[in-house]
Amino acid sequence: MRQAHEIFQAQLQEYGLKTILLYADPPLLYAELHTGARHTLFFYIPCLPADIHSSTLIRAHLSILAAYRDAKKIIPMNIKWLFDATGEPGHPAMLDVVAQHQSLFQADGCIGYATDSALIGAPYLALGTKGYLSLELFSRTTPRPVSSSHGAVVPGAAWRLLWALNQLKNSQEEILLEGFYDNVIALEDETMEQLYNLPDNASSLAQHWKLDQLLLGLKGFQLHYAHLLTPSCSINTLHAGASASKRSRATLPAQAKACVDFYLVPAQDPDDIASKLREHLQAHDLADIQVRVLQRNWPIYTPLAMPFVQKVQHALSHTSAQGAVLLPLTIGSYPLYPLYKFWHMPVVIIGTSIVQESASLAEIDPQELALLSKQTHMIIEELANATDTN
Image 1 (cartoon, one colour):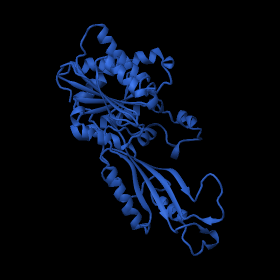
Image 2 (image 1 turned 180 degrees about the horizontal axis):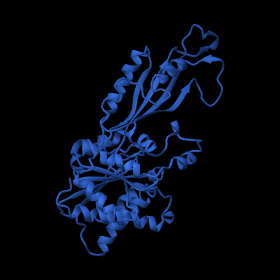
Image 3 (image 1 turned 60 degrees about the vertical axis):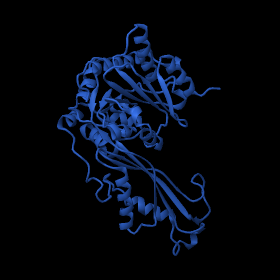
């Protein structure tokens, strides 16, 4: 039986697209339509492996190809796509693939897609994406567990790890690593002002997550500033001893580990943050805590004044009555940094609640498909007529 990405490759080839499977498991699939036009547009499309041929977003792009074909018209731009089914912001395959195939990724600009506009309260156009650093902190104190009756004289791995975690941030959510905020840059006033125009969705978010209130009682502008422009540090998993699901015997665990996620803002470097964390632990007599980088992704930001941004924003203003609100960054992290690193192309991200994977084609809402198709068509036409896309 053919896998989903093989079915999808065949579909794309029926539209005359050149396709290359750059990474197999999970799939990273590249597609290209060369029309001989002067400008080239790159689309980054996240998807789930099983739905790589059936998501609403992908169907929208295929419908545009079909519309031009049926009208016997040539698309006025060269188009490139990367369909990313890794599902991880810091998957190492992304950076490696772009580095190995740099010529494939050359374009005048890139449009990515995000799936979290419901958390913002409106469709949006983001000028960048947060960075990401996932770390494992590991403590080992003895070769094997010993009885907890010796807790007065034997160091405990769980306590060592808890003390290390307690050094990362305080109760006011301030990250305590020395120099952590040093490289954070201020964004343009016009971009910051857009946060005041966002709806105050504190109550709906709290209800969505079944909370009495959000962290620190955040609301309105402060909520959106924290959500979009404040770096964060969170504990993902915490484990000590043989099993976290059942009570162990009265023993001191020989080892303990935790996974910690940092979301970073423009100019913060995940490698630098990892180094700062190691130095921080050493300075607090916790040098025995081992730190391993699991994943990393760099933040990117495209200035609002760039012509590419202006053209995309203008195109989206014609696709719905409310248009799209302008955000400085996405809430999450998307692996678009390699495109910026090698080609310095402008990158923006379209956020809409309808970019969700569908279990079957029957679940696709025709109105959602029509809106995405209209957005894609307007962006292509707007950029194709531009004299300067950068």
